Length: 178
Ligand SMILES: CC(C)(COP(=O)(O)OP(=O)(O)OC[C@H]1O[C@@H](n2cnc3c(N)ncnc32)[C@H](O)[C@@H]1OP(=O)(O)O)[C@@H](O)C(=O)NCCC(=O)NCCS
Picture 1 (cartoon, rainbow, N blue to C red):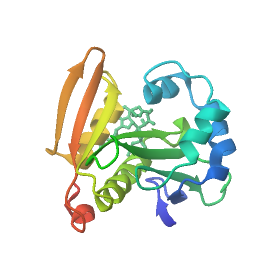
Picture 2 (cartoon, helix red, strand yellow; picture 1 turned 60 degrees about the vertical axis):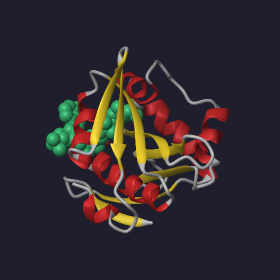
Picture 3 (cartoon, rainbow, N blue to C red; picture 1 turned 30 degrees about the vertical axis):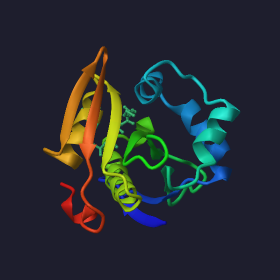
Picture 4 (cartoon, helix red, strand yellow; picture 1 turned 90 degrees about the vertical axis):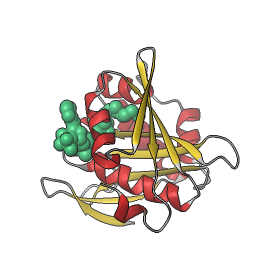
């Protein structure tokens, strides 16, 4: 659990996701704008099913790892989620995804989450993130550039871009980012 502050000074806790977050996650998803849902899931997704929510919260913390952000004053409200899922057993690459609730975007939360995800992944033997995003998703591309600088490559796959983000070695991860 870590206390951080958004650009506008809101205090937010970042912690690992838990199985009992399933209901909160569904509520957060339902409250996202259609565009934010679309950008996160690369297609229309008005709601998370119970099965989706279980898949996204009942995770082992090693091959599938996720962080949530909750305002200090509203601990029941998840306002951002970042996760990675390893590309198969023993692989040193993982797919990552991030979503920040509309009202909390552009306050630095995406940056805070991506930095922490990168450190957690590096500690778990992951060397590369694959990040699939719509090719016109400017906020996601800026976020990747902001956190990974030169250490990212892009491949256009139709209307999507696959970003390959190179993670620093464990131990130096936090210091090496940005
Ligand atoms: C992408 C996303 C996670 C960024 O989160 P965020 O908390 O707004 O990001 P930050 O506040 O840390 O900003 C990171 C960078 O993006 C830029 N940015 C954020 N929102 C932006 C917007 N709407 N338009 C243009 N740039 C934007 C910021 O200015 C910043 O760039 P800078 O460092 O050059 O100033 C958020 O927009 C989101 O949840 N989008 C929908 C889901 C999604 O697209 N996920 C990615 C695919 S899985």
